[in-house]
Length: 305
Image (cartoon, rainbow, N blue to C red; front, side, top):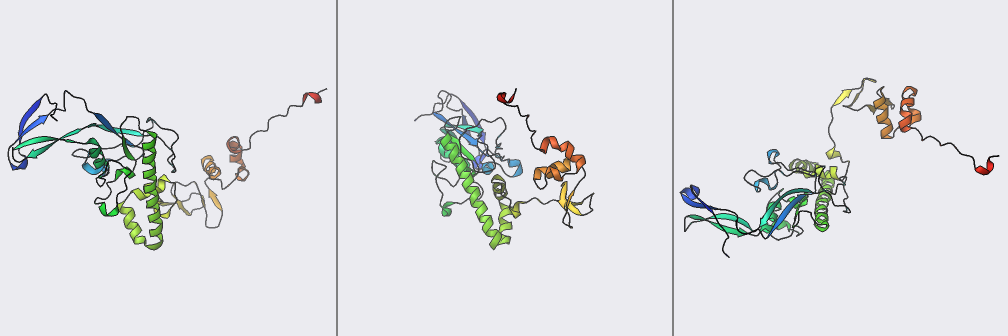
């Protein structure tokens, strides 16, 4: 099939060690693409090449492409099953590509650059997961056929569809892939925590997805707790976590800073009731944490004489 090309831009290049004639062909100017493939992200995570987390690590252009996570104004699809703490059913549109994709390749015989057509589905899947040689992101890849590390973004919320509003089926499949991947990481971490803490530390330092998986499912695990520097408590003089307004003192009592905000934090945590709050703070907190007022009882009409 002949290319529908109306213009050519001739130049020369030093590729292949010499002057190679290059003809830059405009995108089939007299013919529309057959269809488009649209890329989406269903995760709040942003992949930024400047931070070493570029989507496809440079396969999206010469320097990689920053892929934004879900935004507040992104649209949503209701009714999806999302297990994790992130209950968002939103999707973030990334970009689109036409079918077919036109690429150039050097021709050593003619000393020119030729053009080739590439199936956009293969191009997009190769961006998302270079180890997937099929046309579906749901295809399981055998471990002995995985040759890259950290490049499978289909397990991190990236997926594609053929319409700018993704189907419920494909979006739900993307959520399931991501949650299955995060559950696997949590299982691995739990086993290593019991059997090989050195190996666990190595895994955590090389793959940030472990920490994100714990946060996603709201798992309180020792290896994902934030380290906070201690500071001296102004009330009892003992050490307490920085920023904490109350703590358990060494003598077994609850030590609370003498402020309304501190006692509000205590009530929010549920470790004390309003009746246990000092009187000078109790009166101010009563409208927020006290029992609801009892409505007046209206006597029945038969009882009124």
